[in-house]
Image (tube, rainbow, N blue to C red; front, side):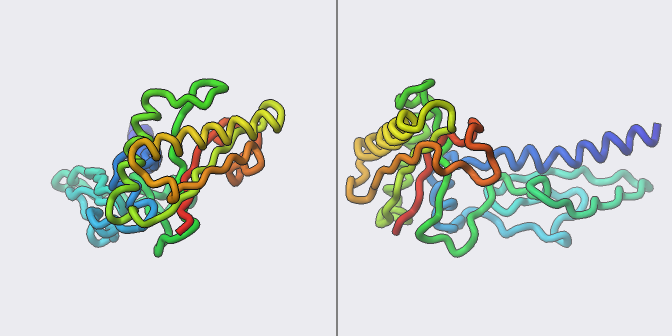
Length: 216
């Protein structure tokens, strides 16, 4: 029975960072500011082991995402702390910060979805793109320039994928223009399947994406 309880405790602890890490996409205009500049003024400092005590909320490095840890019962020895883990599962932050200082070359995956084989944004993606447009008009970003990059997977012929990636990037750029972002701040490039994400096969679906890259 004790062995079963210990197994459940370890599995539960291991799953918490994975849930937090899954929320790494920007959701608000301030998220985009944080991702592109490193200015996350509303974020608390990263919790240290001394600041994370039983019974207190564990405050993460970014959006104040807190994981509450119940206080141990009286006369019950506290469970030993798990050894540091390697890889993404070690990260407790809901949305990781960019390396500081952020600057030209900083990129974010806008995580926008399109209708299959089309350059038409889904309704949810269009709404999220408008949030990005809003962020570009905030004081922290208003003087910056960006390249909107379209990418595809390697399914299909190269010419079709180059065209599709360009049209999808242009769709996002047109939405930004219509929302009031100056045209001279935005350039548009389609790369087809020439630039897959590091560590992924060119045919992987994750490569179907639109990214925003800060150019100045």
